[in-house]
Amino acid sequence: MNGKGCWDDMTLDFFRMGLLEAAEAEAVRSHVQGCPTCQARLGALDLEDLRLEAALALTREEADVLMAADLPDRLAAQVSGGRRGAWGLASGLVGLGLAAAAGLQGAVLPWLQGLPLGGWMSAGHWAPQLTSRLFRWARSLLWSPPESQLDILVPLLAAGLVIILLNLWQRRRGLSPFHH
Amino acid sequence: MTEREWIRRAEGGDAEAFGALVRLHQNGVYGFCLRMTGRREDALDLTSEAFLRAYRSLAGFDVTQPFRPWLLRIAANLCRDHLQARQKRPTPVEDAVLADLPDSDPPPPGQVLAAHDRAAVRQAVAELPEPYRTTVTLHYFNQLSYQEISEALNIPVGTVGTHLYRAKRLLRKRLVEQEVAT
Image 1 (tube, each protein chain N blue to C red):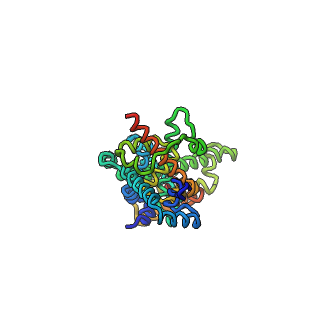
Image 2 (spheres, each protein chain N blue to C red):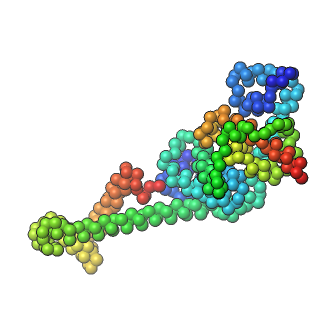
Image 3 (tube, each protein chain N blue to C red):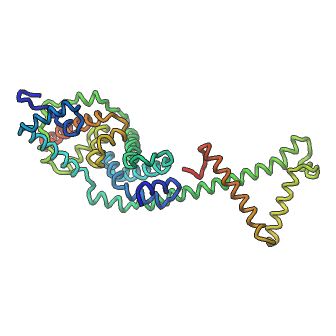
């Protein structure tokens, strides 16, 4: 505060911003009401704000550059493609898992059990029996037309259920490729 | 459709809703990045990256909170990282150093900025230290309140006021120097 009781610029600026404590703000307000000099200074600060806003606003040329970049469509396509990529990755992982399972039951498990490769195929084990059924079903689907709608619907629903369960499991772990 | 609904749909993977959000906020984010970096290509890249990061983080966004400050916080972080990487030897500017900048005879408020054209003011803003430039741009370009800036930058409201005051003091000084130089 100077000799005339006028407040410094920082206090006046904070007063405008509403950042002063209630008591100090009241003291500044009562002074400004009776001080033409401080009223003019506050007016100048307001004008300065308007000038800054006008100076920083986007020019037409700058806005045109942004429009030409077509960000909304480009970015939407990018995230859409990203999701497709995630589905592709998930499908690939499922395929990889199936291949690994096939390798496990065709080579690793027999080896662990001391049998020759595929040696337990005739040993009454549940895994080869199930695999055999699946192969028979897949072969009949590929080489002969399905006899009923259930022949198509049931495997598709089962596959969908597996994918959904995998997704939910991965989401719980925060690792799902389906979820960004 | 409201912004909140666009956000919900985008969070569920709706690319069209995400595009709508980009359309709604691209001016603000691009303008902010442009004022921060001063380069159009950089600003476009940073704007794209800010939106993509926001998209990936939508699951963690509280839809009861305003979206714009949250989005601008992402943009501000990206711009700060970008500017630091652009400098060969990044030198973080501390408040204490900024407070000691010489200001022996500060010109009166209002008169100086009023006398200069927009390009000169923009140039002076571009030369402000990064923390001040961020605050000035968020307030005068993006029209964020002090409270919103405080939340976006994770600094106290009083610090926002101090940054704005010191930034304007520096602007007046630099504009006077430019005038003398020309």
